[in-house]
Image (cartoon, rainbow, N blue to C red; front, side):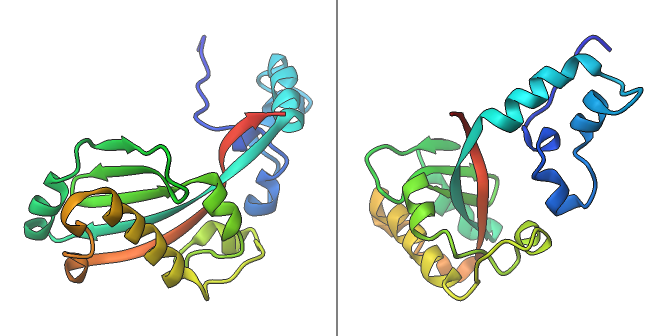
Length: 176
């Protein structure tokens, strides 16, 4: 192949090993004896040494088909970027599912809160607790309700599965 497309930096970073208990696959390809992609080494080094991350919390809800039609029809777009709010950075709609993405500042304030169903944090032994999950989800849902008319989510919350919280510690890489 002439191209290698990587959708995230994690498979190249040393932090991969904490969660998956094996060397990061792109590092192996770049640095191991007989590695498949020796020219990748410089890129991997730059990624591993030069990135910091903004975190994000994501509250996810899924609605029954009937309830979701009216509710989700009020959202102006499938992806709504939010500016000027200290809690919400984006609201993403896909079918009957809604994902509410927090701002980095909100995630930093609640960095010790993770979701009860979140596999990655448990596997990686991330410091945190699920004790405030419901509170953090409520803050995110309330923020969306304040942005859109008719308190969209709270009017249909009884028809929702969730919200479930995910803490995404390395959501948005940025160069140092």
